[in-house]
Each structure stands twice: as structure tokens, then as C-alpha cells.
Length: 232
Image: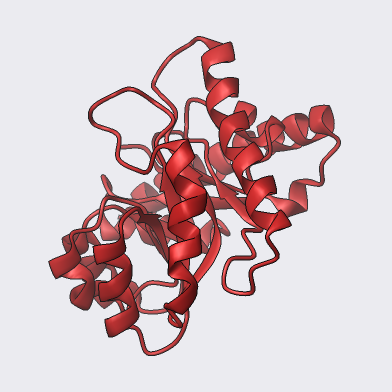
């Protein structure tokens, strides 16, 4: 058993080494500092043991997209990692995760904002999700809806808009990907110009296993990596 663990552990470590290399290369192209990039290990498809291996490899941020996933892994790992809820969040399930997560990446409607504000004991770091793809499976606000929505959050004392999140389409067309990420980067600039205390919007959560290098070149500060890091 110990030998088997060592083999798997080495794989996660090797994956992380390769990912860090790609991050460094993307940052060099963009004139950025790799230390400004946070890797979120997306553990939604893997076991608790695999999530532990990611922590052992040096990852400190874990992402789950289902309430049940957060519940199970939080019971096993507690507050060792920084927890990110990265999936679409049903309003009725907010109460089940609110005391377990450090970030919610999928704020996209006022009913959800109201429930978070009602349930949170302290200001919660939230990303407003932006829909930059025509794919029906993608959630989020249309780009033109983002600024009016954020302005409506003024009276929600328990919500802190730390940034924007998007999911680009799954494509090999680099220009399509760049256009999606640039749209969100431009929105971030507009929000920052408003100088809102509750919406500093310093972060951009964008880029996954297949496109994180391009996302970093276009301004991502948090990348959500699953398959390329912890497998399936």
C-alpha cells in the first residue's frame, strides 16, 4: 500500500512541476510574476485520498462544484485547504456550504446574493460569474449585465466581490479563448475604476486544464486545474 501511495504521490508532484513550468512560461510572455498565480486543484472527480495527495504535493487551494463534494471532503480534510465552490450553486443549498467555503466562484443572480448575505456570518469572498460562451451548459451573466449587477450588491454587507470568473468554451481555437478572457479582463478594469469598497475585483478566476496558460497570458490570477493535476 505504501508503495502504491508513493507512485500516485509522485504523479501529482510531477504534474504540479509541469504545470508550474507552463505557468512560468505564460507569465514570462505576459511580463507577469508567477507568484501572482494561484492554482486551485479541482478535486470534484477524485477521491479524498487523491485530494490529500494534492495537499501533500504543496497545493493549498481545493475546488469542488457540488454541495455533496464539499460536505464529504470537508469532513475528511476540514479547514486545512482553502475551499473554493466553483460550480453553479442552488439557492436552497447555500446553507449547507456557507460555513465550509472561503470562496464562491458562481455568483450570478440577486436571489443567490440575498441567500449568501442572509446565511454568512462574515463577508464572503465571491466571484461574479460571466458567461462568455454561447454553450447552453455554461452559466453566468452576460458581459453587459455584470456592472449593473455589481452595483446592485451595494447593500449586501456579507458579500465581497473579489473578482470575476468565466468558463471559456472547450475549443482549440486560441483566438476564441483569448477573446473570452479579454472580455472579462476588460470588465475587471471597468469595475476597478468604480472604486467600490465591497467590490475590489482584484482577481480573475479563469483557465482550466486545457487553456490555463492562455488565460494567464490574458490576466488570470486563479486557475482551476483538475485533470492535468489530479487526474479523473
